[in-house]
Length: 112
Length: 115
Image (cartoon, rainbow over all chains, first blue to last red; front, top):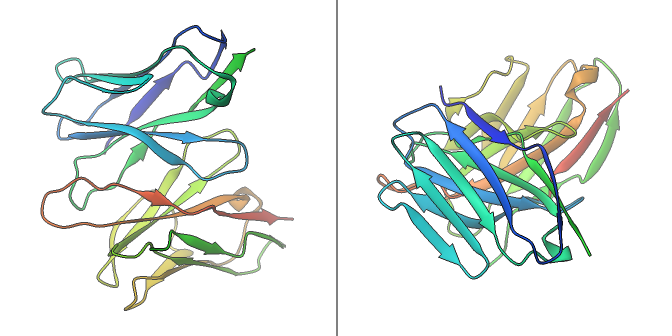
């Protein structure tokens, strides 16, 4: 089955700096890679996703890159703000009826 | 359009007891997945229900079981509770049709404490 590894487990950045979270996956059949943000005591919320037919996707200050050959994908947050502080989860799935497998999570702290 | 709702939000049980958690899926969704999230960990897949049948299962013992109803709502049942079952249980609904991606929408979770 799919295995998703995520690092770092914790990340502290100064407000305004960039943050990068990296994930690797094992199943070459995976073709959909979502990222979720979970604030303390709240539900995971989808913030961005990428499909295997593209290498990069941007949405304002957030971008995701995918390297299918290396089975790597990364989340990039630019100009970080205190409200970006949360736990971020990467995930992978072959799509269709297949389960979504999550990474262990990265706790991001943005220091004002 | 309503989101995913779960009940109860918090509950405390003792070892050996049984628990039932409930989930109402988002309007337009036909699939429900259940995840267990231990403190400081990522969500772990328990199982998925589609058309009222289990459609995929993670590494959880048979004492974890579920149901999906005709209105796409779902229940998670856990028998013979163990201390390690203490966790946040997340329900996520999605629409599966053809080869499209399984885009999950999560509920707020049910936090179970086993004493």
